[in-house]
Length: 273
Image (cartoon, rainbow, N blue to C red):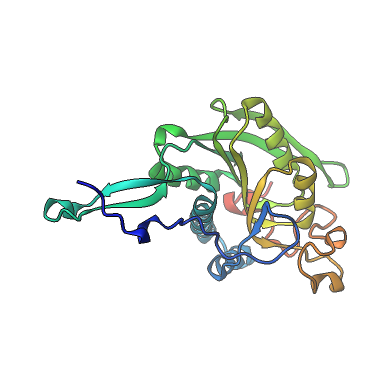
């Protein structure tokens, strides 16, 4: 039986979610989503505690992985047989669906990235051929000097399951602050092949983070709900983000994001060390 060829099902569904205007370049996607903004605002509130914190993180990353998959993952024309085919020959249709043979790797950056990566891994296993979906694990932490300034990030251990050649590499990490963690992660994966795409998925990013990744790994695709540049001059805050990139500032002297939400690794684990 030939599938029903209704053109409605064959429209390219790779439409991006609404985004905020900015001047950081085409690889940066700042989502314009009041639902996610509201969830993130609650997550960042000092009044929000466990277990609501991780409930919000799970909801937020369930939405974020959907936005990324819709925009960045390949689709194929697929014939689908519905239950109605038993009684109606028209119970078949063709549609553009996600290509289930897409290879994907999601990276757990312990500790703030553990729950986000698990959520992405779980979602992709339902959408794709699970034999082609992998989760890698990296133990990585900020390094600071005696004045508590971040000097970089160091990898203390990792479990990487093999090549990333041709895969879509996902790095879900709630806070894109200095960029040092993402730089070290991308550097580490260089010895594991060339992914089809590398995508960082954040709740919040800073202008400093975006600049560092542009300078070190310009092919990295970045998705975020919010850009925080709260320590920028007042005149800069009234301009489109990225217009005066060199004057924008979102990090305090200890490299925490302002307005931010505190250390997400700490609040998500109730471990303030």
